[in-house]
Structures are given as structure tokens and as C-alpha cells.
Amino acid sequence: MIHDVPTNAWDLELEELFLRTGGRFARVESRRRMRDYVRGLLGPVGRKNSWQLAEYAGNATPHGLQHLLSHSRWDADSLRDDLQAYIAEQLGTPKGVLIIDDTGFVKKGITSAGVQRQYSGTAGRTENCQIGVFAAYATTRGHALVDRELYLPKSWTEDRKRCRAARIPDERSFATKGELARDMVLRTLASPLPIAWVTADSAYGQDSHFRRFLEDAGLSYVVAVPKSQQVNGPRIDHLLSQAPPEAWQRLSAGPGAKGERLYDWAAARLPTVTEPGVGEPTRQRWVLARRSISRPDEIAYYLACAPLDATVPDLVRVAGCRWKIEECFQSAKNECGLDQYEVRRYVGWHRHITLAMLAHAFLAVMAVQEREKGVLRPTHPTSWTSHQPKSVVCWQLNPATVLHTATTC
Image 1 (spheres, rainbow, N blue to C red):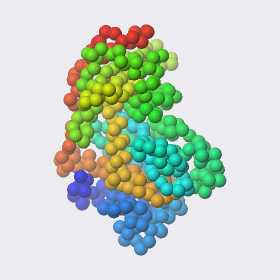
Image 2 (image 1 turned 60 degrees about the horizontal axis):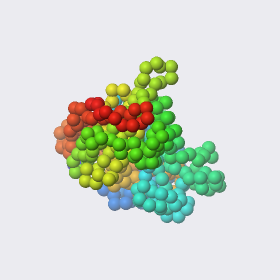
Image 3 (image 1 turned 180 degrees about the horizontal axis):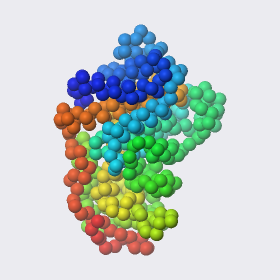
Image 4 (image 1 turned 180 degrees about the vertical axis):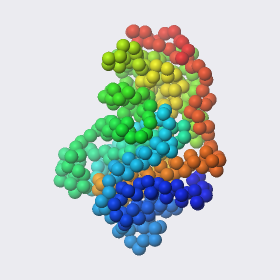
């Protein structure tokens, strides 16, 4: 889609982005190589590794681009900060949603930083791979990847000799994926990105420490949890199995490739949350269930903490946002070479991934700009609240966590 944009608009915006980020590269050679690298990631290159990117740039060898990733002096985290400021300016809205998820990068051998046989949700099985934990930012205007961290298993962090060979900093100790996610949330809060909500899959949502962290940070959330998740004693699937038929309402979780993602949803309020030092309740906790229309036995479960005036469609909208990071992974891998790197060291991984995220952010911004100018026809409504009823049935829990009288939310 973006390749239909007029060349002058493409070049002008890309040049603005290069000027915005060029100060992170002290040497002229590094700035030129960064530009060549990003242009190659955006270009019609079959396999976006250093050899083919160098050929696309007209270089005789890939040594310059390899030096950019491995030995050149520049800070990938500072470039990430520029990327976040760019996305905040171009896509930011006060109701922005931060999405946390991880993705796998299948690799051969044992020398690539963080590689080992581990479960990859991308492959759907245990593979020899690296795992990257990512954050994406989504609003009504668009969505893009905004942060990343390479997960290092204990088999790596407990072998400092192996870590030094992969150029992993000595201060980098073992951190769970949830801890990496918390670090990214904190960085986002310190960035210009305006966020009101966080969403994540059950790998993160089932972590009570992660949920408490979000509440302490003043963030609302809708996170998936497994059916075995306990809520005030009972399992969440047992709790929601008591929902009366009228509690289920058909709602859209947002537009997909084949139209609106329609499911049946049921929601129940949990006790309110009172901030320390504040007498009045400030937020409301919820349980939420999503049931497939074609396969009623397929039910997903969520825990939420939201403003007191939040409605069930608000929760459904945020829950549906989690798919947007999957779209980011797919487009960043297919169009920007996110997973096509050949670097093995820790520094090189973060540099390639950050440059690929920068290229992906550029595509996201250009798509929004051209759609708003009418050059690209929107494929779906831009409002997350379209196709939602004005009122939705929900029900509350009594002190014994028994569902009872339905009310209108």
C-alpha cells in the first residue's frame, strides 16, 4: 500500500526522519550508513541482510553496514527515544494503548545472544530461537512498535564468559519477560507517548506483580489470563460460567482483515480500587469473557482495571487492541526485515531491531498521512467505538462472588 505514495512525499518524510535522528550518529560515515540501511529495509530487497542491503545501496561489500551494527559508536536506546517522540507526534492521542507481547526469531547454533531451545509463540512450538519482548503503541490513527528488549535465559546470564563473547553488558542480569515489560512501561511513561491503557496476553496478564505495578503506576489495563486464574477464590472460568444468558452481548473488538471482529462478551464488576490517601474509589476492577460465535466452547478470559466511568465497550476495545501488535510483527518482518538479521551479538541485535522499528514506524506514519489526505483509501473505520451498542448488559458480584441481577452499564 505505502509503495503507491508519490515519490516526493515519501522522500520528504524520510529525509525529515533522517534529520531528526541523525544527531545520534557522530560521524558522517555512520549517518550515511544508517540512511543506506533504513532505505534498504524499506526497499524491494529480497532478503534484508547486510549483503543484499549493501548491494541495494550500491556498495561493493557489506563491511560498512556490518560495522554500523557491530562496532560503530552510537546508542540504539537513544535512537529508540527519538522513535518514540516521532510516534507520539504523528500518532499520539490521550487514549493511547501500550501493547506488550513477545516474538521469536528462529536461529541456528548456540552463539547468538540469548539463543536456546525455548517455546516460541511465533512458531507455536519449542525451537532454537531468540525471544524479543516488544511494546507497540496504538491509537485511532495508527500503530507501531516503540520498544524492545532481548530476553536472556538463565543459561546465558549465569555464564558470564559466554555473555562477554556475545558482548552482553556485565550489568545485564537475568530478568523475566514480565520484568522486561515493566521496564518498557516505565520508559514509555517517561517518554512523550501519551498512554492511558495497557494490554497484554496471558503470559503477562496472569502475573499479579505486573498487574499491581500497572495499578500503582496509575494505568488502566485489560489483560488476558488463563482459565485457571483465581479471582477472589474461584477460578475465573467457574465464575463466568454462572453468567446469565442476557449478560452476553455481541460486540466488535475492532476491524480485522475480513471485517469487524465480532464476539460475544460478558463482563462483571469486581470491588473498586481506592488510592492510598484518597477516600473515594478511583478505579473499578472487572472480569471479562470473550466467546467465539462459531465455536461457543472457545472462551478467552480477561482481568481489567479501569476508570470508574469506563464501559464494557471500552474494555472490549482495549482487549481488541492486542491484535495490533501481531499486525506490527507481521508487517515489520515482511516489509522491514525485522527477523532477517545475521548479527549474533547483543549490541548488533538491538541496533538492527531498532533500525527495523524505525523503518516500520515510517511506514505507519506515511500510511496515516496519505489516508488522511485521501491518497490511500481506508480499509476500515478509524473509530474504535463504531458498531457498538449504546448500552451493554453487565452484572455485579455479591460479597460471596455469586453473579446476580443484570444491570445496564
